[in-house]
Image 1 (tube, rainbow, N blue to C red):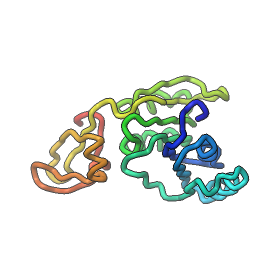
Image 2: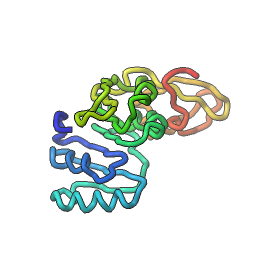
Image 3: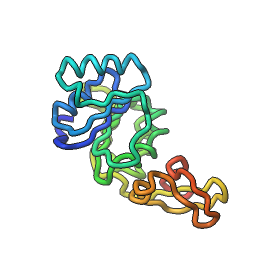
Image 4: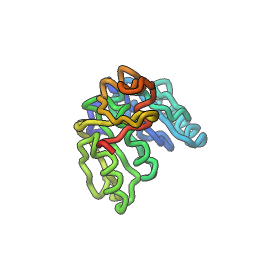
Length: 193
């Protein structure tokens, strides 16, 4: 995070644990910081650590895993590979065009799987080790270089969607063939299935 220019940025620390990345983002000047975890004990620790570091008022600490549909400048996630792969479409939709993502907590044997899940939306800079010498994958470049596709759950029509259209519609689109409205993010893929 220290090498990223965070002044005025919106940052999400997904799987915040003790809150160290969210706290660092706030100290480095992020305008909005959201710390998310599924473990209430992690949120208690984040709250206490943020207070000790004088940035508690600048963090939104929450169990709410729902991400904004767009507009995040930087997302960091230090969680297991399985959830990282599952969350790739939601993370891609939540991050603004040109935003950045940093993923960690990935074992060396999982790096290719996680990288493949994010490749459709992100230019990935994968490296084998993080600064502490642990296996990791990191991507810190432009988002969403390629097209995204969705599929109508009613008539199965497949069509291309843009990040801008998803942001404008907050994920809800209407099928041009049958007229059904549905959440395109739930049926998002990087290629025509």
